[in-house]
Length: 264
Image (cartoon, rainbow, N blue to C red; front, side, top):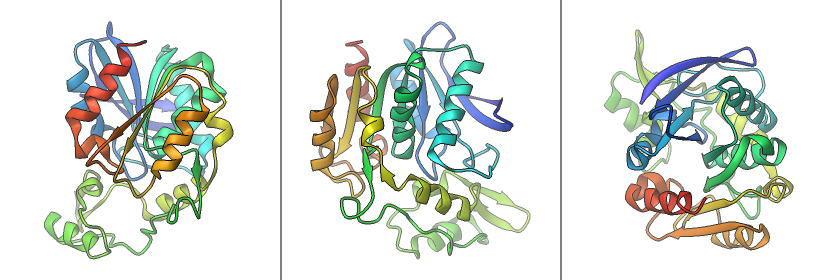
């Protein structure tokens, strides 16, 4: 995938292009702490018929930090980004927070969204259904001597596997750290705590909801209710997968997406 930059609502946002211009475009939106490059395996699996356009959202990866991390800001970014590329309507795929942005984009800008693929993005994100909607990273180490030390320091915070977070690891003059700002991520997660049912039900385009049955973020009962209440929604439950189903079983995730795209 080729890295590019776009000026979007006063911010310089990075994005990755994973396919020929003539292929069917898919806008991909990562989750909190994520990077656009998490979609590289899926881009390869869907090539050459689809062009993966993965946006690195505000405050993440190589994109600019911002003053506002409210969900509306993320949606407005995605809408202007698509208009800037003169694309739409397109398939919009999102993981976790990116999934919420995706279905809120469809509700507010239906002319831009042809179909939805939502991986582990819940219509309700607050206790008690979601016991811990915010991962407090404010106390995580800002710098470590080596990449290995950074992994150990993150895992010492109670994270079983720091691999997802290390996608944002970079070496700086004073040691290894993460591209995102810790306090920004806490603020962004807190802003996403809420009831998003109206947005989930607010669009009519076809949708695929992918749920990892071992997820600690999206309860299975909620995923099934989301599929039952929204017409035109297909639910795919992936056994042996958690919240990051695209990492836990890339082949099964790609197969679910490919099968859905074939129905459009």
